Length: 83
Image 1: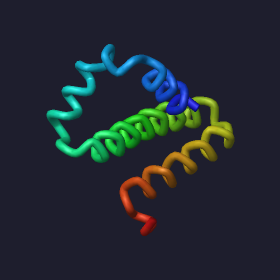
Image 2: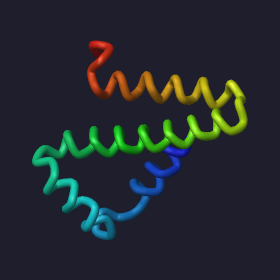
Image 3: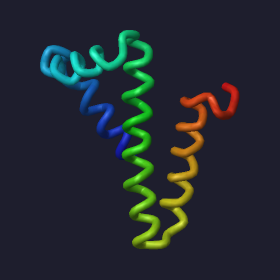
Image 4: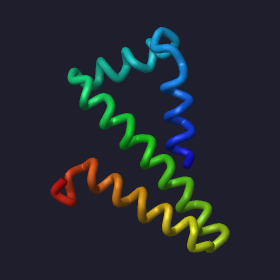
């Protein structure tokens, strides 16, 4: 949920206002596909960390299910599941 809210916020802004972030990512990664994969992976790691923190604090299984889904998404992005 946090990932999608942040992604909608980023995609909703014009690209001209994000030139600083875009230039940094272009400097780090030469291919634009690598940039998008890296952004998605960073957002998923942040969301997983936040949800895992909430799970450890409140011990509700809803947070743990969301963490497992995000771990699966990260594994697919990193190619661990062979997709």
